[in-house]
Image: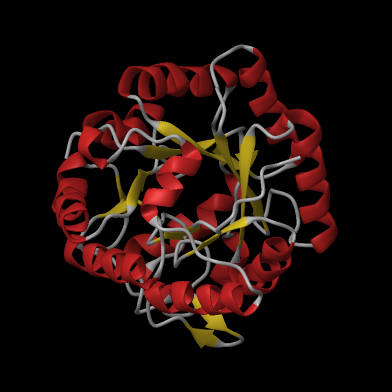
Amino acid sequence: MAKRADKVVITCAVTGAIHTPTMSEHLPLTPAQIAEQAIDAANAGAAILHLHARNPADGRPSADPDVFAQFLAPIKAATEAVINITSGGSTKMTLEERLAPPLHFKPEMASLNMGSMNFSIHPVAQKIKNWKYDWEQAYVEGTEDIIFRNTFRDIRHILKNLGEGCGTRFEFECYDVGHLYNLAHFVDAGLVKPPFFIQTIFGILGGIGPDPQCVTFMRDTANRLFGDSYRWSVLAAGRHQMPLLTHAAVMGANVRVGLEDSVYLGRGQLAPSNAAQVQKIRRILEELGLEVATPAEAREMLALKGGDNVAF
């Protein structure tokens, strides 16, 4: 069974590549906005900050290391948080583009998607009449006909070059039960060593649904495959975020919030910031009698190399 943490690690995914500027005026787009919101989220209790970059001119996803550099240094200087750089980028980036930032900066952690999948938000486009930027509508609608590529060879390449090559450990993102078996394949091959951090993801169109029964199924499957070799975390997309995280926390999960996963704080209420979501889930956790882990405690749980051993 997954190790139940004495304390709960809160991850905050600050901006991502899913939502577009039209969907929320509070979505951080520029390096300064990303840095400010990340620092505030860390101060609110997030031990891990999961970071993407955006073109500061129009908010489209960016894999430019120069853009990452503008917010990584300020965040590191202002917080003790673990910085987790995406290796997923966006569904429209090549593998080389996606890996450029983490290979350059050699972070303590990076995300790693554990399988190719349909990953779509195209139904959202039907609800929006006026777009802030020209690129947004085609980007959102285009997800209906795109495959988010993460082949076994891609995953092996990332594990060897970013993991073994840079000492980076991973947030293994599992969007469906098959992704857990993909991870087990790499564990059996000796390319993934415990303790590993499994982020089970619910509610993305193309992945497993946001139902409590699915959370239980994914947890039971991971326990069967990995025993006590892993730390378990849960994120849920959109309106399912807080209810499903509360359910999962009772079951012993760590949790992830952030405007990458949901732009809302409550029903019909846009989240004014990432910190507001961190504050809300922290309040829920503490009311459940759970304690929130510090960055130092998260580093110990996940056997990370430490903030002094990165390239930024």
